[in-house]
Length: 237
Image 1 (tube, rainbow, N blue to C red):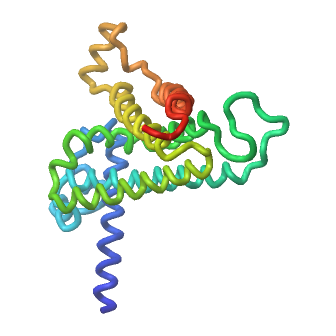
Image 2: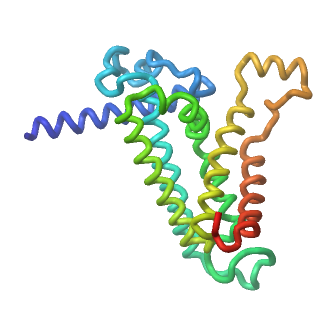
Image 3: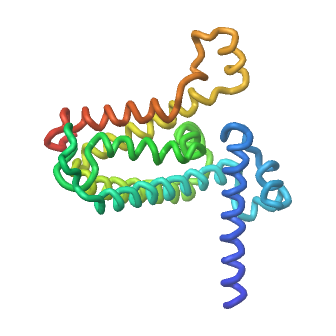
């Protein structure tokens, strides 16, 4: 029994090391699309065939990394929401849409989502790949496990934002959906492939490479949050 427990702990530790190596590889190479199992296993100090004991394929490894990203993003949002509800009310009150008393205004909720996503560039990159291919390139059971974790993380961060901001579940559901869509799209546009980067140098007016990811994300999520409290005042979507 003790040996079995140690084996389970060793497997969990090695799985975490592979996830960390995959994230480091994505950062170093400029995106998830350039990650290879050979590069990941080399970083993790594991023989390239050994990864199959932990993940059946590169797609399964990257989906597990996206799952981990959901957990980390949710935890970061919940931590900041908790900190926001402990802060004193502004005196005198700040003009604008901020609610009376401690907590987050709608625009602050939008900025919080933008900032916590910008802190996880690999997760933002993965959002596109999950939807395009990763979920469809693994087994049904693995896809089910990913969906279970992602939805649990989503619901937990929405609940935290609702408690901290006073926005409704419907408003926040729409805001989080916008955050995921913006983050996934903007990350790809602002991190072009070498081919596109060279093209943008030749034709500057096509230069999406100049798109500033975090400021653009902050602007649109702040604006979206303010719009949602106007267009969905009763919380119905």
